[in-house]
Length: 419
Image (cartoon, rainbow, N blue to C red; front, side, top):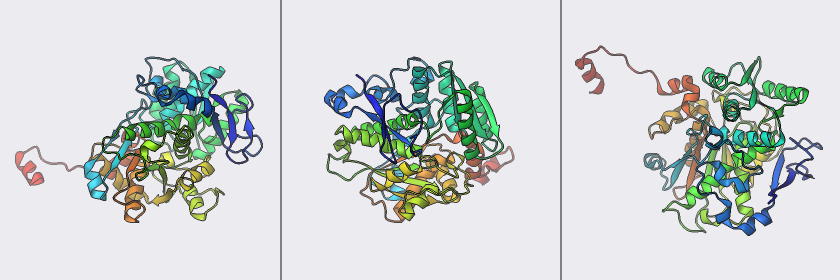
């Protein structure tokens, strides 16, 4: 069945056949939404849309605009189907009855970005692209490098020279061609597009390649499936789920929104009470999308981003309009949090066994603020997404945790410390 039937511009609504465009709308530069044949998919029924024996995002292959990427037995086939935990102590601290944390750190390269890269590499193989390029502060690049290495594909990564060393090391270990740019993420983004055009490379950039959101939407499918299976989840008609996600360039939140819209088009959201409310969380020091949401417009204005959460530090978000709509169209909201609040959220999650990098902890910091402001009540079921492992940014983890005491190698010294 031909499930992928075209693209639709998110700004002007222009429609294109699958082979007419590659990246953004040629009329206005708008991000393209992948259009599936929902009528045909709906006729198949929910049971035929999930490959239950695939413990990865590829369990949703019937709902993805790519074919089977092969690469069996490799990390390419291991992205997704991440765990969702129910940290009771965090729920009690916040006064919530139902709280889940979806932890993306078990992905092959330890971040949410593996979802997008797995689908983009599958697409690159389908269209015969020999080289895939991306701009990244680290996670997207690592995901592309890892997925490409798994199937012997060449990857080129442009990263700002200020990216955390651990992330750059990961890119190089995977064998990618890494070019550090003397500038920020936005400069790396622009240069990667120029290089892709000049050398005929396939560009993975988020907020540019429409297949990235298709990979990221699989997290919404998993939330739907995992929450539906929870024994304590009330039947249809209950309070809608609220999903908290950190936001940088806007592609993760727009991808999650796309996933829920796909499920809505297929009539499958009743089991979780309908369309979830989506809450985007940004650092106060990188808040272009939150500013636009607060202004009630879709006019994304750049900022000078300085947040320590490098994965969401973006001057000009490339998927800002769809990111604003993800909150506005679902009854969610945008919140901004300080970098200090982000650092406090890291050990808060750590004490329930979840090690989050600053960008991942941002979503939890946003939930804390939403509860304090009354946007979330005790009856609201909440899902917080941790987008990446704390091992991605050990420097920030050390800053958040503080230094451990140094003691004399004696039992008396131990007694003094432990009381």
